[in-house]
Image 1 (cartoon, helix red, strand yellow):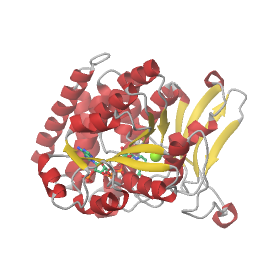
Image 2: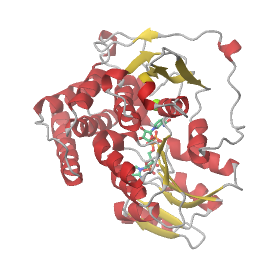
Image 3: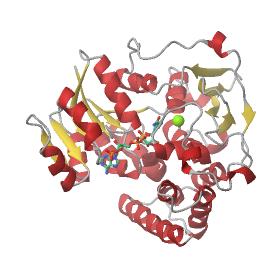
Length: 384
Ligand code: NDP
Ligand code: MG
């Protein structure tokens, strides 16, 4: 029986992880469960699976939850408590499905504690990829990607020699505005932006898909996970989200991984790796019914956030930290109706232009840049 610590359990990935755990009660036990503030979503899971350890965002939520649970689970709060549950000696697998760079420190802790990590929290790799990968290498810990593109690449690379990889081809559905011109983006609302054509996901990543920043973050994530240079990572548009990504080898042979757009499949694989378990939660892929798959060239003019992500990734140092923090804050302002859709990219570009890059920043520097940039974006954004 594998003991699981799930971070971000009330989110889109978190809830789907719970479904996978429930499908295999003989194999998995939810030992520790962490979430932010959503007590109503958390309670039914907690009452059903009775995790021994629970971590929430702050003291107020701890008290609110404490009044409502029926058994003797240990409730704690804050980042220290997250760090504690990922390093519990009983834990076998840590699922990092929190949103944003708050996942950084628990990831480092889980690596130091030598846990298998099912990793969804891409912002952590964007903000501090060099620190995370250095620690992973030193402790010989694999980050098992949950993100569908990276899970695909990971599978295509199984048993392969990384030196024989020519390029990685990431597919992008294009998000909710893929068929609109830039002129047609003026005045779009968050409700329009939240209608993703293929995937049902949390709101931040759905907005990131509409701006194409999600693919930009994924380019940086791929760079760190697979060690392929930026010029060897290509993004193409693929409307159907059936091919989750591809790897081209030096002999021009291309491997692709296909599947229905269902995140529970890569989540389950990250939990069962290197084995595969049966899966019954959705239908098998039916290519005959789909009929055809479409591909288009990606445009940096149409999607400047993707261009900015490549530039920040290539520049390295503290610039990806700035990219991520500015994006997290700008998307949050957009979701709260403080700024317009096209302001997101402007606010990010503004921060990237102002920043003087610090080479090889340590954890303290990253956390302070992260806070400083969020502050600056908030101030500029609220003036608009
Ligand atoms: P959601 O917004 O749906 O969920 C985020 C989760 O993080 C919630 O459980 C939230 O708790 C929790 N959380 C936020 N802040 C804290 C905190 N300070 N302490 C503890 N928990 C916290 O996001 P998604 O599930 O969509 O995405 C999660 C990650 O997975 C992101 O990095 C995303 O990029 C990545 N990802 C998501 C995909 C998807 O299909 N959704 C696909 C590929 C990658 P609460 O809501 O209770 O406050
Ligand atoms: Mg993805």
